[in-house]
Image 1 (cartoon, rainbow, N blue to C red):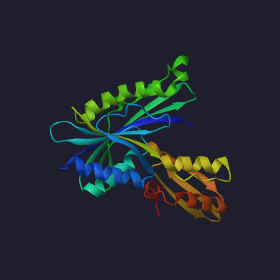
Image 2 (cartoon, helix red, strand yellow):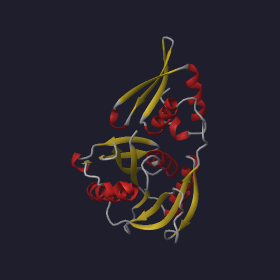
Image 3 (spheres, helix red, strand yellow):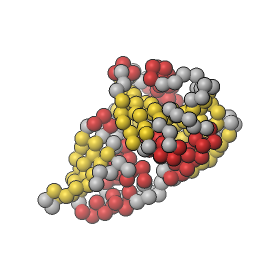
Amino acid sequence: MAKIWGTGIIEFRGDAKQPKIEKALEKALGSLGYEQSYKGKAPPEEESEEPRVKVDILDNGEGILAIRVGEDQVVRDLARLVSEDTKVPLLVLLTAAHLFHRRSVQVKCRKWEVNGGQLAELPVMGHHDADISDIEHNELRQIDNAMNSRLSDVVDSFTRAEGTQGFKVKKVFRYKREIKSIKFSSPRIERLMTTLERCESFEVVVEGEQHIVKLVLSGGAKSLSYVKAEEVVELEKALEGRPELLRRRIE
């Protein structure tokens, strides 16, 4: 499976004040399994050695506020919850880079309108996307730094064309993800759960005597996974307490 880096910006398209946004942000991330480890007006003097998600509240000085999230996986779920809480429509800009076979990288930019928790994807000019095939051996030694540097160039171009300019950081947060670990009976079911975490939508159906997990993946591609009845029980247990995944389930 490809390794993925990403970042997203959630812009507020209506009247929203920073205290209200901050409250909605903290509430939403808490419900999604993220625990706050830092909050301040500037980044911490020393970053934790453990992985932390960087989250910023931004202000462009002309009444437009935004949330910037330093990963792609949580952005759309966060936008849904914040829009529902604040009752303000949003614009979401998402950029993700996928590393395949340690050398080939694909960068994809996507855009949504969010209103009352409902997402509507908007078209994006194809020239924002990129294929990067020149990852150097020395970059592979520090791949996270190398990829974040390359990704920032695409993000800058994308946000200049599709988003609001002039944002400055007003509040800085760090979050760690606290998801209850589930021990699956096989690596295959563990991989399926990882795919569920990144899919657009999914459903679990029974056709004849066969249980099937049907997934819609990023970009609209569809996938089928045939599972046993006892494996469905495992997946259902893993989905408990995961509201962001249950929202993607088609009943």
